[in-house]
Image 1 (tube, one colour):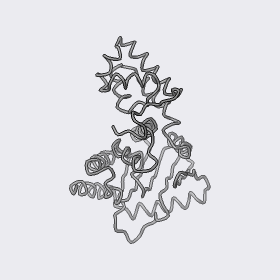
Image 2 (cartoon, one colour):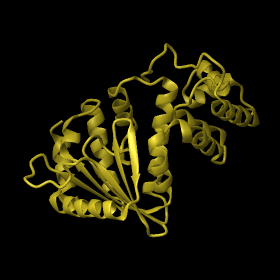
Image 3 (cartoon, rainbow, N blue to C red):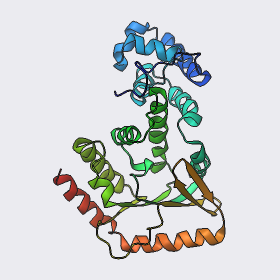
Image 4 (cartoon, rainbow, N blue to C red):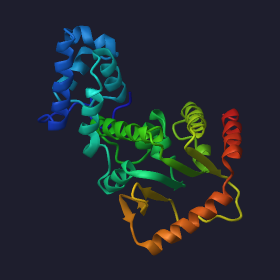
Length: 279
């Protein structure tokens, strides 16, 4: 795994309280299973030093570690819950947290994106490649927190009762090949699988389009479980939740146009398969 700044990814100061609490939870379940660190490490595919660093709260666990530890230790979902609590604040940008909270209460979510594949549709490899592309490089701990929270949010796609999702993404985001051909192939396969979900529509905006209602930039719309609407707009190091009814009406009009201008879901899937074949 590629690290961020720093030689080994371990914190050099006092342990973060959230990391420490997670590490203590792992240690308690490991001891409950009557395993030493030396016995436990190979079952999760990490070194004894890695396990020790996690248990001491000096290293942020990877997504793979959390999943393997949960499975190996038969932890009743406790490690997943502890990891989610640990990364809730550290894995999300401060300006995005309010929108993430609203997502948890949503019944419908519309997303137009022209900068990067939306986080709810990213693979782990694509997420890491994107994180590495944008300076400054994060530490390993920060990277792992970001990736974990991004993948954790994706559970919204299959949560019941279903949230209705509509995604419109630019073809150029696939053509860019962020992370290289292998990452892009995996990403396309993932998009095709997500598009098969009964509550998810994915539409591709083709490279050539004489009419385009999204030239002012990316945005999102969300309907809460109380059937109120909110919007979201994001730029460099900033994000804004929009509640003004007039502004939300404008975004609805633009999104309606975009849905007409983009390829329909079936044609979008066909384009994705052709793009995959060209890699």
